[in-house]
Length: 74
Image (tube, rainbow, N blue to C red; front, side, top):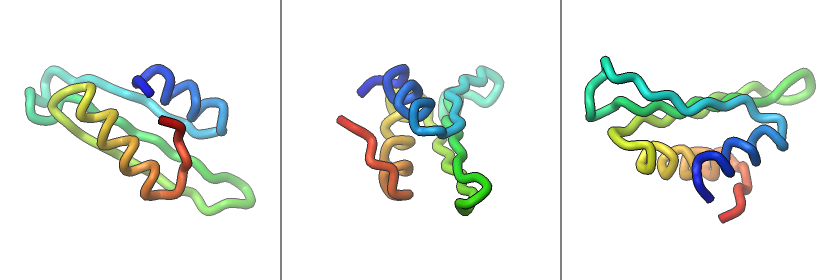
């Protein structure tokens, strides 16, 4: 699953998410993924991943989301 497909899946499942690039942070951590969920009847949660490339950031984000219990498709 690529970044766009992952973001679309998260949208369909009511998760707020973004993938951001920040050139001022430098190559080591220029990419950030942030997601949050929960609501009125659920506990609020936040997942964040930082990396030097978009591919690595998405890989870390998928791992963090799965560890939190979201069952993302491959």
